[in-house]
Amino acid sequence: MDSKTRRIGKVLSDTPEKTIIVGVAWSQKDRLYKKSTRRLTKLVAHDPKEQAKVGDSVVIEFSKPISKTKKWKLVEVIS
Image (tube, rainbow, N blue to C red):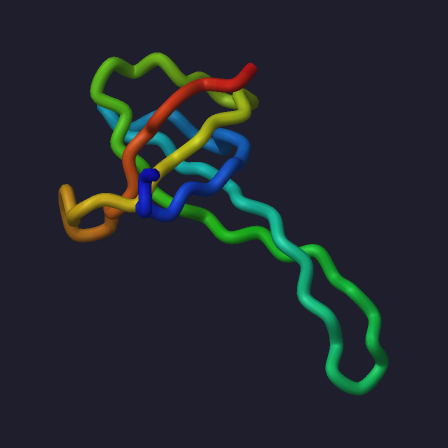
């Protein structure tokens, strides 16, 4: 069993070389009013083969730090 954290998200940008910016959506519930709001977290991931393009759904995995902001790596492109 792989114990590393994985997230599914959508590629927002692929402009930097060997890097993609992935938006991971999640919901947050208000403590007082109990209303759910959608939030988006941007994660910077390593894409060595540059196979992911803007709009693709991807699976990323937490890894050791590759650079100052890159702590995730691309596992697979779903669509």
